[in-house]
Structure formats: C-alpha cells, structure tokens
Length: 242
Image (cartoon, rainbow, N blue to C red; front, side, top):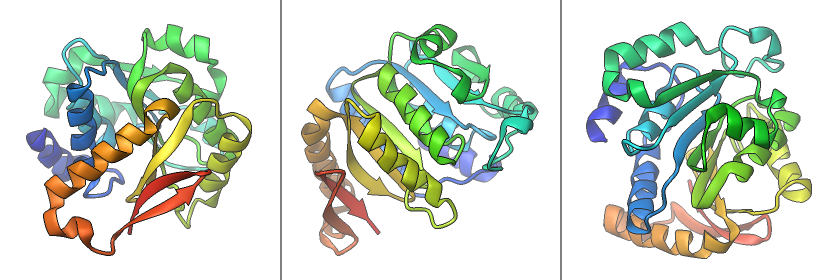
C-alpha cells in the first residue's frame, strides 16, 4: 500500500488530503479483522488519485469500480472536475498494470442509475468502500449517497468529499438533505481532511471505537492533542479532526 501511495502522490493529478491514507489503512485493518468483504467503488474518479489508493487495499477477488462522466462533460452541471478517461487508463497501464484485470470502468452519469441498475452495471454483490465525489450539487449528492447505501455491505465505509468545503457548500447541504429524507442505514463516525465518513448504523459504534484505538496506536501522544474532538452531527457522536 505504501508503494502505491508514493506513486499516486508523485504521478497522479487530483485532490486528496495527505493523511487520508492513514484512514484507508484503518479501513483495511478493520475489514480484515472482521472478515468484511466487498468491492471498492468511486463515483467521480477524475484521473484516479483516490481511486488507486482505495484499490490498493482490494483483494484479488474484489473488483474496483470507477464511475465517471469522463468525456461526456455536457452532463457536468456544476463543473466539479473534468476527468479524462484517456489519462486514467494510461495511469492504469503505466503505473498500476497489476490492477488492470480488477478495474471496471463505468462511463455514466450516476443520476441515470437506480440501485438495481447499479448492481447490474457494476456486477457486484456488495461494496465495502464507496467514495462519493461526483456532482457537487445537492441533487447529485443525495442521489449518490442513496446509491452507495443500497450496495454497501454491513460495516462498509462511505466517504463523501468536500464536506464543509467552503467552495462547495452544496455538498454539505446535500449531505444534510440525504440524512433528512433519504437515509435509512448510514451514520457518520469521522470528519477528516475535507471528507465525512459513514458506515452502516448498527456497526457505527464499533467502527468508531476501533478508529479511536487505531489513532492511539498510530499517532501516540498526538491522538490526545486538541486536533481531535468528539462532536455531534446528524444526531450521533462523531470524531472530528482539524
């Protein structure tokens, strides 16, 4: 995983916090410890910066699904990114050829997919890590979180990009609208480096406690400094880092 991260941050264009890899490491440890299996998926891949980091923890039997508009930018209503399939595929071929057989590219507007169509299109029994970084308007965020929750396995993780991001307030609005009208099984457990992380409601407390243990193990004394704080959001407790 560390070798993949090094290649990604040196050669792949995109926007990913430098410490997100620590949380991906936690997700991998937690899922391995509790035998949680499923595919890896992202809506809004751009050139693959986060996608490749997430794909590095996928098992040989797990698919890595990339959903993006790519060249069909007429559907990019808010100009949130303009990924190139050509560049993405070149990165796969030149930087990560070992991933090639496990990556499935879906050139689509996520707004055109129902949950059943998503399952059929990506050919998955369930997803354990789902990154939502597609359209940044309210409607896309509600839709994409709704899709993610329908295919997520128990104990799986959904991460929403640009949460509380000052340049994209509609993402935060979309999150709260989803939680109010469309959510039926997700709860937040972490706000970290421009993302909010959610898991299935029944597993939320266990995930959060495991994360606290990981933070103490990973960061030692830093875990007790003021950067970490317990907050309440969407009616539940949540760790937040600033």
